[in-house]
Length: 550
Image (cartoon, rainbow, N blue to C red; front, side):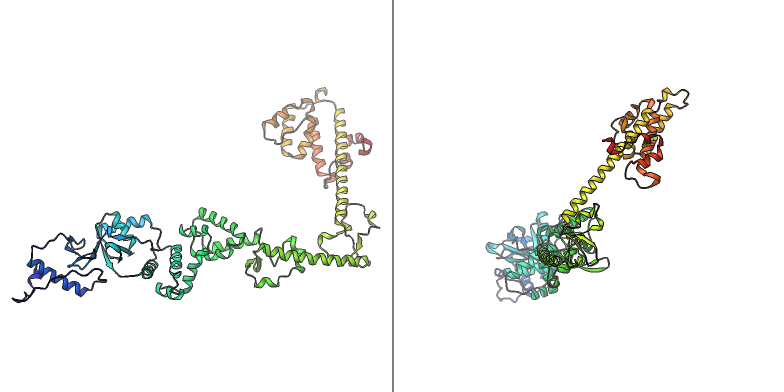
């Protein structure tokens, strides 16, 4: 009361001024008025102690008594703080921030519990003595969780547009919004039509390109938006991916990106660029306009790519140190291919017309699959001498212009050749077996000096060493050979071979090896009489030519 005692008492006979509470919605409350009103209220409280104090509360900050005004707020005349009960404040839903981190809220609650709310909440008047929260939702939520009765406020008279501006500016300047929340809030603010992008960017303290890029995030598919919200990627990743979202290659890129983020955590923008280039270069539905794939190579001189330089469906990536253009639009590419094929067919028809005039064939004008050079034929080409499809190229090479006929004759000749190899192998093995049948068994050879156990071990080791088709050919005389040499089945198979045949097994395995290698170490086309005479001359007399064997 020292402050009150120092005050000069009013002159006798002077009239006491009646203190009037501030009218509802004095916004904002001027500091000078607060001081004046506080002094008068304090004087009146000293002079009239009988005043009803049921409308006084205690200031949470300085523990001074509060005065309750008509607008529903309370004022502290010592610290000049204005307060509202938490049940007087409404959440409007206009706040662009939609996600509140539980950990951050817990930290804020701990700070408020120890130090109180240091910065007032901004509110605006609403109906029936209520107030709408404009700024400070995190502090308000924390106060409610702590069950605080009063919170400090600053009351401002604002319309909806001003409320949105304040909410957006405060959240962005404090970096409290996620990128998607910023994009949604900017979209909602611009949708009212009373402000341009450049003006809004200036209010936010940002550049117009920054604001435009935030709006571009709204064009991203929902899967990318969810990755931004979960902080797996940043807006830079999304801006890089936006150009590919409408093409089939995007599915491959997105799947690889999800796999990398799940395995390695955050993926850098540079890593994403490499991933995109790799998917485009080796994608099934992307098309290299510079180095055409094998199936389109013959169309290169007929493809009209002049309009592709102005098209938005192609991208440029580095491939083997040079910049290649890739088309991402499969439908457009297929249209160009069909046009090129028509031009190629027209050129082929013109070339056929020339052939009717007995002129030389220009192979450069023909697709590679429309002719075959007769010098590469496996069959006898004497039958093609009088064929209309046999012509000569400008290089004076004989060519066949009927690929189907050429392939049919080639396949028939190859089939005949393979059958001949199989027949030759059969008679060679028959000669070997007939020779072995005439060799005395080991048990019938007196004093042979051969240890059967050692011989069986040699058979097992040798069979393992040459395992494969060669070993199976050598052993198939004694039954079906197992597919693996390391199984119990193989051991049982070897055990089933009679002791008297062990020497014959060794001979047959060695013959199989030489049949595989061929005569005199050359390349083998299967068993033949020359190899048989070299490795087992004693069996040669039992050889019967395939024709005679039949």
